[in-house]
Each structure stands twice: as structure tokens, then as C-alpha cells.
Image (tube, rainbow, N blue to C red; front, side):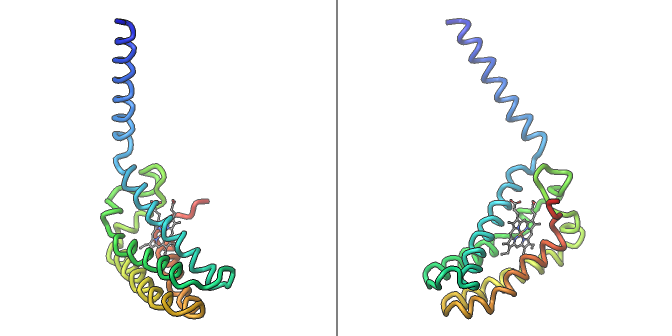
Length: 156
Ligand code: HEC
């Protein structure tokens, strides 16, 4: 009885210490996970639109408008809130964010605005047909890659 309690107490304090140690190691862990999740969702929706643009998936208005509005919604969420100063590559585990995000913040914000514009354009296209989606892919894909080129460290 007593030894069980001791074991439990030791275990509880160890795990409390472990989670404390983890947070102390990287205060940006959660915010980096959040921005990765937002980016990955956009990639998935962009993939759905890309398949329609290529003709590998048949145009379906409900699917297309859902994908485009997901990207528009996420674009409106992205701000400096997911990019606190210091959460950069080599300082935070799993971050590929380049320090220029903070050094050239106005340009980074302009690229977020470009993404919002391209997403709005894609929403209009998605309500029309596959050809309209195809015509809007370059601007939307371009908004993603323009920012990645400037502000995201390539993974290899
Ligand atoms: C304003 C800049 C900006 C725009 C616009 C942008 N991204 Fe990103 N993206 C980043 C940055 C910075 C990272 C690296 C973040 C990190 O590793 O912490 C990133 C990372 C990613 C990742 C990797 C996520 C992971 O788990 O490592 C994917 C996928 C991605 N973006 C997709 C997209 C797509 C798709 C679009 C366009 C629809 C887009 N991004 C638009 C800045 C941007």
C-alpha cells in the first residue's frame, strides 16, 4: 500500500517534471504546431483544387467551393500571431521559418495579403467551373511559393 503510493508519487512528479522540462526547452512548440497545421490544411485544399485543374478529378462545385473557402478562411487567420519573434529555424525545433520574417515584416505581411487576394479570386473561380479554377491556380500557387521562397528554409 505504502510502496504503491510512493511509486505513484514518484511517477507523478517525474511526469510533471518531464512536461515542464519540455516546455522550458521550447516555448514555441505549440505555436509552431499550430502554423504547421494551418499550412498543411491549405496544402490539402490546394491539392484538391489542383486535381480539378489538371482534370484528374471531375469538377464538383460543392467540393471546389469548400476547398477554396477553407484556404480563404485560413489565409485570414494567418498573421504574426503564429509567428512570434524567436520561433525561427535553428532556435526552435521543427521550425523552418527564416529570420527575415521579422527583419522584413512588412513584406511578410504583404505576402499574407497576397494570399488572401488569391484565395478570394479562387473562391469566385471555384463557384464557376474547372477552367476558371485552372486559370486561378497560378496566382494562388504563386502566393504560396513566393512566401516560401523568401521565408521558409527548404527542408533539405
Ligand atoms: C506569408 C507567407 C506564407 C504563405 C503565403 C504561405 N506559407 Fe506555407 N509556410 C510559410 C512558412 C514561413 C513556413 C515554415 C513554418 C515553420 O516551419 O514553422 C511554411 C510551411 C508550409 C508547409 C510545411 C508545413 C510543415 O508541417 O512543415 C506547407 C505544407 C505549406 N507551408 C503550405 C502552404 C500552402 C499550400 C500555401 C498557399 C495556399 C502556403 N503555404 C502559403 C509561409 C507561408
